[in-house]
Image 1: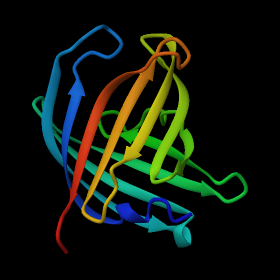
Image 2 (image 1 turned 90 degrees about the vertical axis):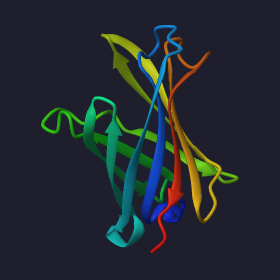
Image 3 (image 1 turned 180 degrees about the vertical axis):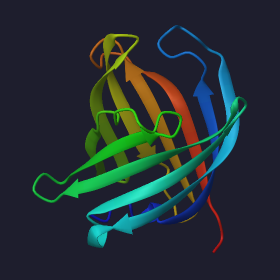
Length: 155
């Protein structure tokens, strides 16, 4: 239940995001942002508030995580500030193993089913790496489409 304790606090982020997902695109956009995370419910949950300063303009998003002590897994939901009254994305679920957190879900993209994978890695007291990948072939191949590198903001 302490897997995400490393993320508590304030971070600045550098983002690389594919402009078009699962379309054989190799055009990336880069931008900066910020993340602020805090624990909830005595550590069984946490929430982060994200700011994305994209070339199209700034927007926010919220990540909500909860821990299931029976399975040892986390569920992560995403609320996109560009559509805050829409449905939450299906949660990615998974756990950390040897300092790497891997989480999966099933979703749709352009009306077709896809698999989604989040990976947290390179975690130190001052840095963390996150990436998102999609698969159109049920996990046989993956396309990384969003990379975030975080650096802790000094208190």
